[in-house]
Length: 254
Ligand code: HEC
Image (tube, rainbow, N blue to C red; front, side):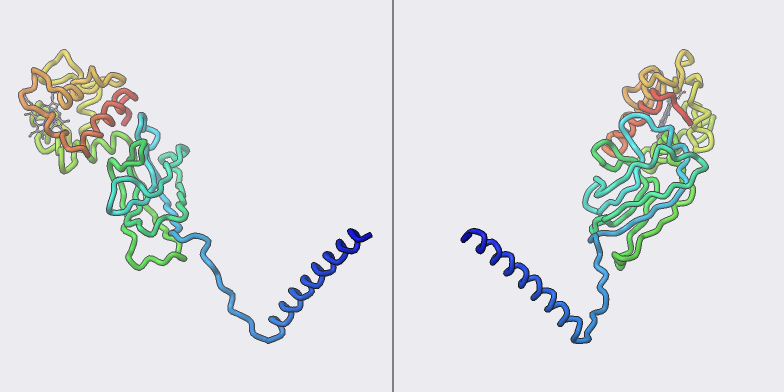
């Protein structure tokens, strides 16, 4: 009996408390003041939408990938990234979204990264404006980009400012009778007999170690008087030795 009455007392106290809460909210409505609605941000970073056509994406093999990512100016590691969709073809338009992108980000990029998310090369870069608002989605259209593996090797090594192979290999009459200008590099290399040693092939698809070019740039070759290894001492270019090996071993696709 005693236990039962204690129980019902508790119940009525709860009921009164509920009434008070209701009463209070009625009072709040009754005072006639209605606050402007406040839209709160659900995230404290940028929303990003990158649209583009990504050509030759499927030529990548090995431990590197092409991503859409955000970078600050302190480190080479992406703050956030998404690997470009493997479904991308030369004619499809892809839309990549990045959510809650850190406000420390300085650039949004299409970049080649390693498995640790470290940037190896930037293919496309957009500077986030200083006054970028958080509630405006950053929309970027990169158009059509060649993001292929050979394209990256050509852009960053054969024509790149550091290695600049085409400076000496500027035509079929240039050094080693090798033309590494953008328009002719692929055709001058893949399956082509080396000039300095006609028993060797410049690029032998599927066999990096057996390719003359790879020997020349990694270990030198007795037939080539100019030492090329020095071109790759910078860490930035050293990663490309790996990329070139993967490219050759993966079939040296254009
Ligand atoms: C400073 C000029 C210079 C630069 C830069 C240079 N090379 Fe060379 N390269 C030469 C010379 C000179 C030879 C030929 C040496 C000889 O005749 O013994 C040669 C030969 C070669 C050969 C042999 C070609 C054949 O078929 O016999 C390859 C492959 C090669 N270079 C690749 C490269 C690559 C790749 C780069 C860029 C990473 C590069 N070179 C940058 C000067 C250069």
